[in-house]
Length: 139
Image 1 (tube, helix red, strand yellow):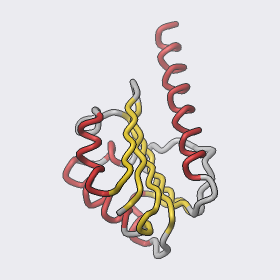
Image 2 (spheres, rainbow, N blue to C red):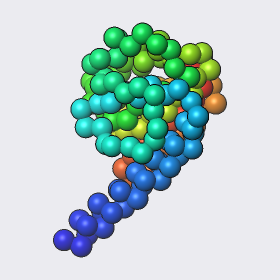
Image 3 (cartoon, helix red, strand yellow):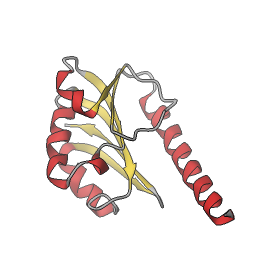
Image 4 (cartoon, rainbow, N blue to C red):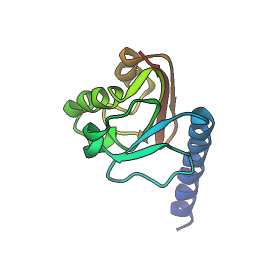
């Protein structure tokens, strides 16, 4: 039981570290947050929050985007269309932040770099034991 509790506490601590990074990165920006089916509550301030399936209804353009637990829920073949729809709502030069659990196709720094490098510049990929997060400037 102690091992299970320690594992949960370690995951929570890892997530809290990511959340502090989100908050610092996105401070003072108009943020569009996209949520997946199992998105956690966040302390990070955002301008607008939409569910993944409601993304195409968003008409505004934002100077930052945050998406948590969206890619891991999608089949690999649908990830690119989600990213394209999301980026259409972000201004050129917008800061983009994504985080998710490590999963097939999104588990290593190389896989994440290959997925996100074509989308932006100043790509920063971080991979922990349980979660990954990327941030970059949209092209």
